[in-house]
Amino acid sequence: KGRRPQRRLPASHLVPSHFCCSAPECFAAMGCGQSAPKDDKKGRKQGNESSGKGEDKAKDRKNAANENKEYQAKMEFLARVPLMKRLPKDQHPVVASVCEVKDYVKGSAVIQQGESGDEFFVIFKGEASVHVKDEKGVSKKLATLKAGDYFGENALLRDETRTATIIAESQLSTFSILRGNFQELGLNDKLQFQNRRAVGGGGANDGAESKAKPPSEKTEADVKHIGDAIRRNENLQTITTLDDARVQSFVAVMWRESIPKGHEIIVEGDFNAVLFYVVAEGGFDIYASAQEDDEEEGAAPQEKAEAKIVNTVGPGGSFGELALLYFVPRAATVKATQDSVVWVIDRKNFKDILMKVSDGKIKDYIKYLDGVSILSSLLAEEKKEVAKALVEMHFAKDELVIQQGEPGNAFYILYDGEVSIIKDDQVATNLAASTARGTAQYFGEKALLDSEVRGATVRVKSETAKTLVLDRDSFNMLLGPLKEIIEQSAAGARTGKVGKGQAGATSAMEKKEKILRKDLSRIGLLGCGGFGTVELYEHKQTQETYAMKGLNKGYIVKTGMQDSVMNEKNILMMTNSDFVIKLHETYNGSQTLYFLLETALGGELYATYNRKGFHGSEKHAKYYIAGTIFAF
Image 1 (cartoon, rainbow, N blue to C red):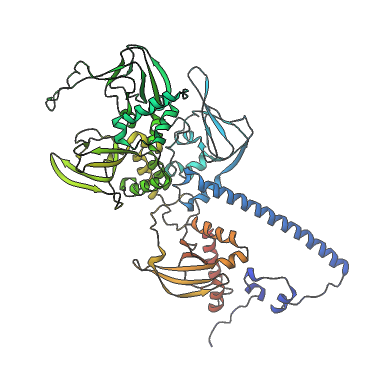
Image 2: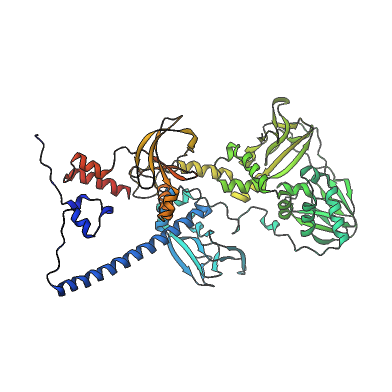
């Protein structure tokens, strides 16, 4: 009574599109009849037209399916590119939308050194080589790039000419992004380009690293001689366990060199410390310059005293190992006393062999790194690289690990033993760690940021202390400066939108806490569907409510919907809009897949329209259409 008459739309308009059907029984159920054609020719004509339209629709559907597959392949590829790891998934589609596929035949130049550039490239398929011309115009091949590698960012970041020529080594397919799109999306702030090991990256010692030579042939006597010398090296014994496998690895890569009498094979203070030596024949004197110990504070540094012989090394001896573990200058000069022969190994092989550990140990190392707050900005893949680069070092009781006032360049993880932290000759605290309890401590981590002097001394309190060590220069060679990584992560967290069309989006980069299934409690049932149920859950600590959608695995497989379910997950993970239901987590049960979703208790729009009588209301139509447009 007193209600305004409802405007009724045709029945067909009230049926949701996914329920529509052209079968005669469906038309009958909807109150629609079918009449036979009055003219056979007309009917045949209409049939031919329908057939033509049907073929066009089938063609359109096929083209759309192919486009979807290509787009999905592009999205999956970008998700695997290390460069994109710091970019939130909801921003991947924005990047993908501006990626243009460009193909190059083998031998063609993608970019030329010296040219101005306005494109950034990511390799999708194939290989390319990096060539740089020196001052004389001679071109030298520096590296090979493969799928997932990128190039051309310098011209976009710093508006400079190309620093190298990139040539396709095979049929090459790339994704390119133009400068305008690159800047509009703010990729120069959001993507991290430090780790360029392939193209001239690495550090000041890269030129020195290239001193490695091919291994020399060795007799059984040579192999035994080198192995015995390495095992006798006390410093190496305290650093790591010298098992047969490690010793054989050392022997395998060493090469033979002849040193003339009087030649200084190592010079005190030299930073170019990249080789370790085992004496095969001849002999060497080791000279060191002594500094006066009683220098007054603030006094001008005294000149070095005359170098004195502090040791001699003959056949079966070795030297140069400590400087290879850190980027520090040589501590002494080593001079040949007669024509001599040495076996040599370079820094890279030396450290690679020392750092070879099992996958289980790598996982343990990553757990230790997870506890270091200053490294919280690193991605999982980056922590794994750091874990592989850690060098094991052992210290004896009362030995100083670091000393107050000295410049710091190494970071330590104590995983077994106890040390005292001493500040201004007073014990400030003790740190203890145990492999049995799985506990670890760390100190010196600020050395990864800068070269500030040590604020305290660390002395070993237990009989032995076992540590894992990483120096700043090695870290920078792996990932780039830590300070820049932290600053970029902080800048990214303050960045909300990437481009247009993200109305109402919350900060895409804000830190998301993991929601564990055990922290949720069930409140009640929200509804049932063909695939399973939707239930209301509450978080025990935060009291936030969520909708838990359960999908029966057997039914998914039976109906062939595996791809659809994965697409639903991937798409929701990549969206960030107030107009799209948020997917917070997914869980994998024995019989069921679970989606933890944002609760939306307004009901189904179709049911709401029927219940509220909104059919024909222009303002409601505008409102819901606007929400859909914002969602897209």
